[in-house]
Length: 333
Image 1 (spheres, helix red, strand yellow):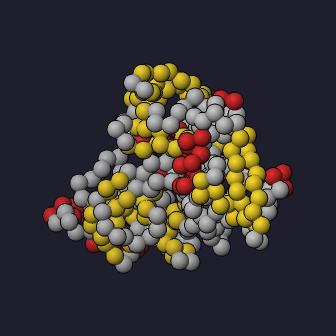
Image 2 (cartoon, helix red, strand yellow; image 1 turned 90 degrees about the vertical axis):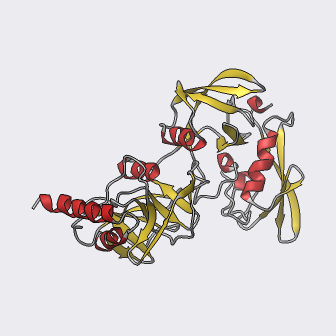
Image 3 (tube, helix red, strand yellow; image 1 turned 45 degrees about the vertical axis):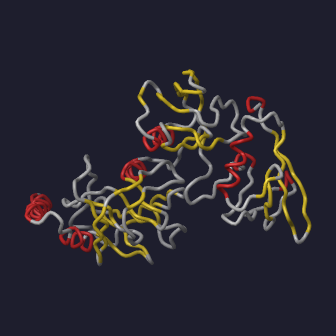
């Protein structure tokens, strides 16, 4: 009996090696190793549990949920016969597979943190399993992109869903470059356009790799970096804190003050300390018009190096415009 799952996988790979571009067997495995949950399809990560993506909290019993990436661990309605395992390598042929479709293609952009998901070369449906011809796990598709296997495994294996933050966001721009920076992050030694060379004595390979190292580290831990700034190598040290936004949780960099905005820059809940009410709309930051969360982060990133001690925000409430301000920590100047 114990040999049946191995025999099943061996048969899959054997048949697929004769026609390596055919993913029909993976489609069949997804069909028998998954279960429908509302509008989502959960695939088996062990005999008793399924993993699904859902932007909103599903209306059924959840074992564990990641609100940042929309991942959910669900009790299976009945034991699965076969399960999906993580690839330890990147297969030559890749496809996005659901019980009813297969789209062959390739990953054209890696996942960089919570805000910048991996991208597939073709249009694919949500909740598709990104896999190779032996039907392992490479990623899970969402409307915004693909959640890579490292994040899926981290979610499954972690007792508590948490991520660490250093107040920086990275991109692959002539190296691993700091492209966004939170000016309100206390004791931050980073500056905009720093190029990260090493993190904890490990060479920075890509923005995706360094972002994972930061996110997956324990909040409150200390890390050492070597960065390139104005053609000079600089050693810096920083403590991480709990990440409070990103991914499915809209990120404006105001989370440190308890100010929560949606994608339309509407205040999601009252912030009495700053006399801000639910429904207020943010119009500008430092007299610069903003129309998206990315606009806000871009303006705030420039403020990290400015000599201004205060950051002014203009809001609108029922036809009435008003200003509030936040103070930057001394290290921001």
